[in-house]
Length: 381
Image (cartoon, rainbow, N blue to C red; front, side, top):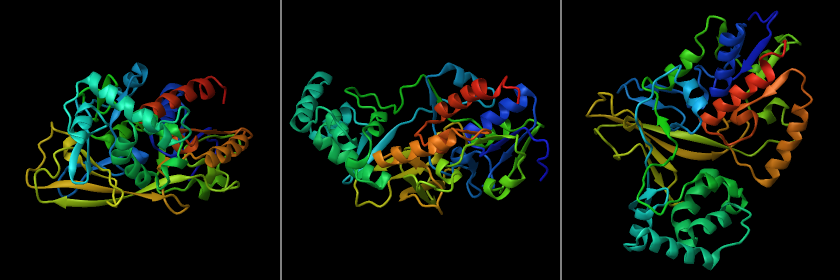
């Protein structure tokens, strides 16, 4: 590994790291080295064809690209084209399938009613007033203030407890704010104008992002095993867990990890949709992904399909972190790490793990482009 004279090094090849590396290579015309601990690029957004069926599988759970940001959309379309997929989610509660997020169909089906939008709004308002906290301080209180206790306990409480491995009363209210709630029959999960799945899969997107000849990608390489080889004046863009960077000096931040159980099922369609949630806490997995549904344009086999059952796990130092839990204690600990990060002269922290933030893919790209423009381009490094 020759890092002598290197000016730019990126740790991690997810969207944040890949975009930064692409900009340094193609806009600045500089050499950049990308270190990737896994045996493939793309971080948790990576997808690859299943060997038995050819179905493109999202190895770390479903990733649907969606954005309101025209600059991000234009940027990513330089590296791929998208199909017309629109995400729709269903949830199984006590053996009955409902639309998710909660909409007018969910309300009417759950309560056995035929409300109009106005009637449903009045009904839910009454549900909310019965138990609502005027100033919600946690996820449970916020959810009840949005949908009332009965809908919360049916569709959100058990799923959230499984998903986050944490009592919803200990989770920040901001998490539930990501979930839409509608008094119409609209079933699209996202409202963003630009949505879809890359036609050739996410693996091809990352291959193109990192295709410049002055980008060197070193797979199966742990940054902490080689950091002593990095020149002192090299700018490091670090996208791994910020607590790991500082050797857990203030303790480990709360992370949620995931485990996936893959099965090739001898049917043409297992569940009729890409994602089926399981709301009840006694069901051990949170959801089942069936990846064939992301590519209706592909001639996938009609006698086999691939499903992944997703299980949530509490994070540990030996497991890959996926999502920040973000309790009040976590936020205090993160602020301590931020103060240390500010003292690092030649290190920039970015991405979901590097900033301890629950970010969608488009926001990761947006922040990478912003960092490049404001902290890398034109700095004279």
